[in-house]
Length: 298
Image (cartoon, rainbow, N blue to C red; front, side, top):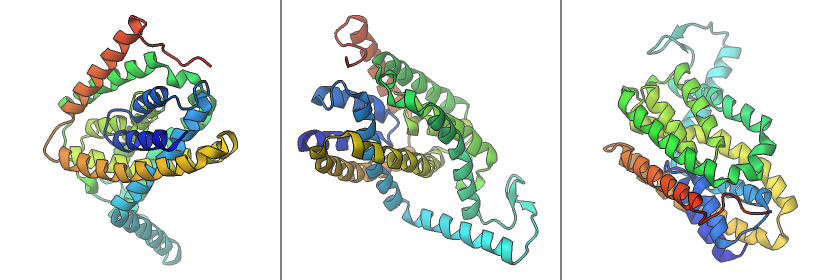
């Protein structure tokens, strides 16, 4: 991987990680077009996962105040529970938040709970996820269309009434299991979790914010696990371009977060649905007429 390829990958990752159009689909295409590690899907997987650490940094910077508030409240409230011997009573808007937990600390628990499904499934199917099957364009095109249509359903049936302070265990479970779809190429982690949030009755902006906060454990675990793999399997001359790609993805990712949250305050996800469906149909047509191959030959 050279510097130009790295910049292209960084831009694509930063643009598509948070906008619900599937970063995997676009990165697979970008890797094909630029010819990065042709015939080595495990190298592509490791590279993509490491570059995601740049977008993780974007989340930390954008939500720095929220993350600090959640972390400090989480430690403070549990310290008080253990050493001040407070009893556990239940309160909150839906009767499920312990009264000794602040809204910020409770949100921390919801992020932990929502991260369990993807962590469990990701570890169980790690080898499959890293293999060539997850780069298959038939699968990618199908998931682009399927999650796009599910977003339409979520927009139609979701009540869109919940703010961040109204989130409960039901939200964490629904969005957490929706995030598992992100392990399928073309689904989009942000698209799947925003869809889950809308189905759970969250406002669009709330669904996006919870989606981004929920991405922290998933992206961090994936990136750090694959970082060790990348150091072992990638050519040494790729390390500098990999750093460049990660930095670029962080800068572009920050702008993407800002754009999407501002956009969803006043607009639906319809434009992204149209893009996903059109792209998915275009890929299927190209595959059907054998203009492109579904997988890169190894």
